[in-house]
Image (cartoon, rainbow, N blue to C red; front, top):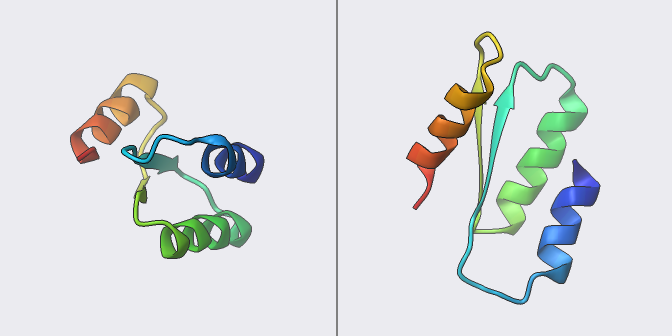
Length: 68
């Protein structure tokens, strides 16, 4: 995930965007540390945790609902 997020922030010239990550049942502290790091560095980064059975459509719709 870090490679993907780094690429977005390093290579994007456009300024009017936001990155929304929907976490679904992650359990490694390393994951939360990574997400917290991006959240503290970038105003346009958000992440939300959902503890539910995996449902791709539901999670993507939740991300759309959180978008500015």
